[in-house]
Length: 305
Image (tube, rainbow, N blue to C red; front, top):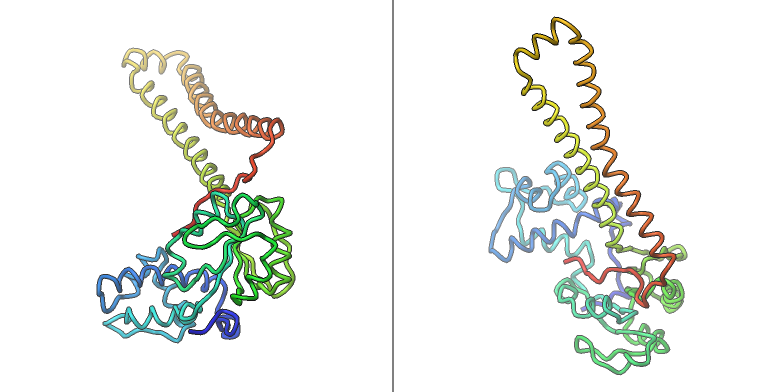
């Protein structure tokens, strides 16, 4: 089997857009599940639904691979698995080195999805003398002094950084200097790399912050809807006599007051989530400036399946 140093995927030379490349693993995961169930063919609509994209986009993506399917039959599942695997470079061996064997690095080292997708963990590296010499996921943890030698011995071209933010750039520089040209960065920092080096960043705390934004917005919408329902209920509870009196005399003033009250209630409902969010941000800033972070930083220890 060829190694990652002797051959690289031809996606760029063949002009496949980066957005399409990013969706290929989604298609492969869905196709692999179909293959495991011995499903021989799949329509573009079925596969698109399983991958979470629309069928027109899927057909466009597959056209870059030269795969157009058969009308009335769909796509051959096994052949598509092969096509996408070949395009992603998964038909060959990709040695990977993981630097930083704290909680996150330990979880990554034990992740079973690497081997099944063509990635072989060739080395585990850490700067802590207390960790070196110990076995993790069947591999001996080695000191960072041996980083360059491990990369050369195993012809590593992909490095995974799972260190605290403060050490990530130095580790990145050493990986690049040793010949690594692709880096998966789990450290909560932005890395600076030269041209020709690809970096993919995984920061689940950012994803959680985006979800928090959507939750806050939904909370505001729910509060507004509740205010509208209460205002409508209050209007329905008015007796016919009260309604008639309002119509004969100062009804305009009463209706205006009721409208102002409902508007104020809705405005207050919308303002409450924003005030709560502002208070939470202030508390977080105070906490962060008042206390030092832990040795592992704030990077989450989760590997996407």
